[in-house]
Amino acid sequence: MLSIIIIALLVHLLIEASVSFTVVVPRDQIVAHVGSTVTLPCWITPPENAEALEIRWYRHDQFSNPVLFYQHGKIQDLQEESYRNRTSLTLRSDQSGGLKDGDVSLQLEKLTVQDEGSFHCYVSGDTAYDSSKVVLKITELSSSSDPLVSSDPWKTAFFTLLIFALLGLVGLILYKYRHKLTGKIWKKDFKTFSLQCLYPVSSMILLICFSGKKPANQNYELGAMKNRKVVEDINIEELRKHAVQITIDHECSHPDVMIIKNYKSVREAPRYKPTGEGFPYELCAFGAQRFTSGRHYWEVSLARENTDPKNYWLIGVAKDGHFTDKDRSALTPSNGYWFLCSDGPKGFYINTDPPVKLSLTPRPEQLGVLLDYDDGQLSFYNVKEKKHLLTMSTRFTGSVAPLFNPGVGDQSSLTILDCPKPVESPVESNQPLLGNSSDA
View 1 (tube, one colour):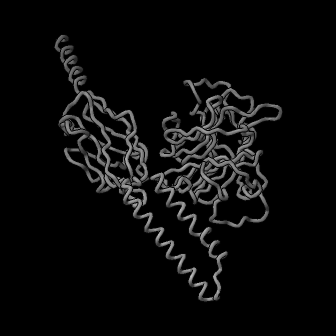
View 2 (cartoon, helix red, strand yellow; view 1 turned 45 degrees about the vertical axis):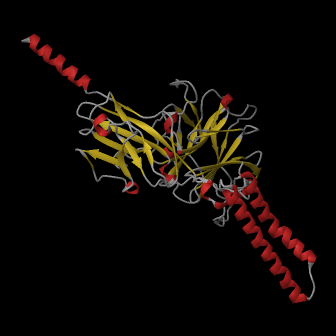
View 3 (cartoon, one colour; view 1 turned 180 degrees about the horizontal axis):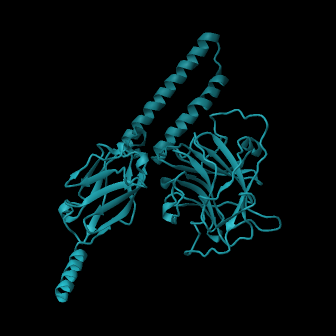
C-alpha cells in the first residue's frame, strides 16, 4: 500500500514538472514611432498550447487594470480605457504558430508618447505561472514626410526656389509700397528689412537644402520625458519665494536610514549592511509633505564644515504610494521616480531609461530643488555657485513627495535646510523660472 502511495506522488510530481514553463521576451528594448503599430514579442518555453492559459499584459503596477486580458479562450472586456480598441494578440514572426505554439505576443496600435515604458507579460495556468517585462521606446515621427526634408533633391530644389520666389515678391511689393507713400526709395530701410527678415528665413532654407535636416537649434523632439542640462546664472532669492519646509516621514522611509536633527537629516544606520555592489538604492527616505499642484522649492546640504562634499547621494521626488523597497531597475520615471544621483567616482546621472550621465563641476555642496507640478518640471540648482544644473520634464499625476537617499561611506549627512521665505506672497506666474536657455 505504501509503495502505491509513493508511486502516485512521484507521478503527480512528474505531471507538475511537465506543465511548468518560462515566459520569454527580447533582451533589447522595442523601438517604434508615434502613430505606428508595434509588436511586443512574448512566448512561453518549452512551447505548449496557450489557448487554455490566462494571458495578462499590464503596465507598471496596474495588474488589475490590464492593457489586454485573455481568459477562458477569449479576450475579456477588462481593460485600461486608454488601450481600448488598440490591442490584440498577434504573431511575433511569420514562423510562429500563435497561441497553439505558446506565442502570446501583444500588438499595440496608434502609438502615443504615453505608451513609452515597460509592459509586463504575465501567463498563468493551473499549476504554473511566470512573467517578464518588455521595454518600449517611442521615437519622433520620421522627418521624411516633411517636403523640405525630402530625400528627392529635385523636390528639395523646387520647394527652395518656390520659397525664394515668394520672398522676393514680398520684398518687391514692400519696396514699391514705400516708394509710393514717400516718393523716395528708402534703400537703407529696405536693406535692413532684407537682412532682418529675409536672410534668417533663407538661411534656414539653405541649411535644410544642404544638410537634409532641420536646423539644430529647433526643438522637434517628441516624448513623454525631455531632459535639459543647462548651466546658467540664477536668482536664488527668486527661487526661495517658493520655499517650503520639508521633514522626513519616518514611517515611509527605509528602516536602515537613520533620521536625526528634528527629522531634517539622514544617513545610513551603523547596522546597515549593503545588499549588493553599487549604489544602495534601497536606502530611500521620503518627505512627509505631499504636493499635487503649484511650485515648491527646498535646499539640501551635502557638505559639513571642514569636510569634503558628499560623494554618494540621491535627491528628487517620488509618486505617493510607490514607497516600497525596489531595485535600481524599478526606480524609473514610468514607475513614479524622478531624481539626480551622485554615485562617487561613477559620476552623476538622472534616472531615465537608460540613465543619462552628466558632468557637474564643481561638485555641489548645497543643492536646490524646484518642483513645478503644473508645468511638469523638476529642476536642480547648485546654490553656492548660483547655477541652474538640470531640468527634468514630465507629467505628474497624483501626489508626489520629496525623495532622499544619503548613500554610504561619506562623513557628512544629507541635511534638509530651512530656507528663509519672504513675508509677502509671491505673485504666481505661468512662466518657468529657468529663463531663456538653450538645450545642451
